[in-house]
Amino acid sequence: YRLPRGILGREVEIIEKAGGSIVYNTRIGKDKTFDDLWHDGYKAIFVASGSHESKEMMVDGEKEGYQGFIHGVKFLRDVSLGKEVYKGKKAVIVGGGNVAIDCVRTMLRLGYTDVNLLYRRSRKEMPADAVEIEDAEKEGVKFHFLTLPKRIIAENGKVKAIECLRMEL
Image (cartoon, rainbow, N blue to C red; front, side, top):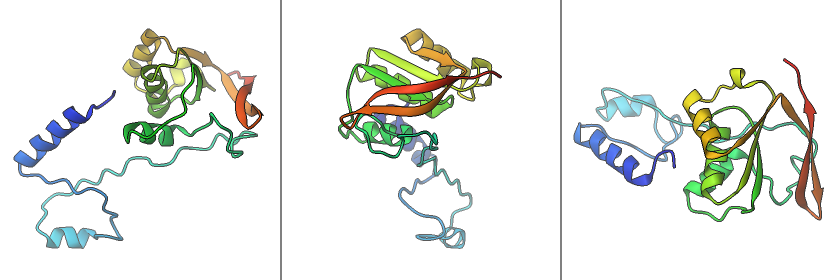
């Protein structure tokens, strides 16, 4: 929802018409070096690697492979690539950054009806963009501030609940 493929394609066209080029799936330092790029005639280089790994929560049950548990970055990547993702009605997302907000808003678009975000600090400390937080609230995401997951509770290999601690600033 954040950047539909059609808009992204149009932006790529604009960059290319302006004389720029975009090189995908290239590892700087392995596939190409900066010296290689300068030698190829580039006059400016912008490297946009993105974050491809989620932070671990360091809670009991996180590494058990329970059905219904997935790290945010992987979830967003799978949705973007059109892969099948776990579907349900209720979701709990942990975090206060833009990845967490992207996850809750994406889950609403996938049909989840009870979407909750847990954040260990208050709204004031959330690093996500303020407009994204506001839009998520308007869309129906339930925010639980000063809440820290302690363990994931599973039944028959499937996430059933999350035990949390109430925090104080």
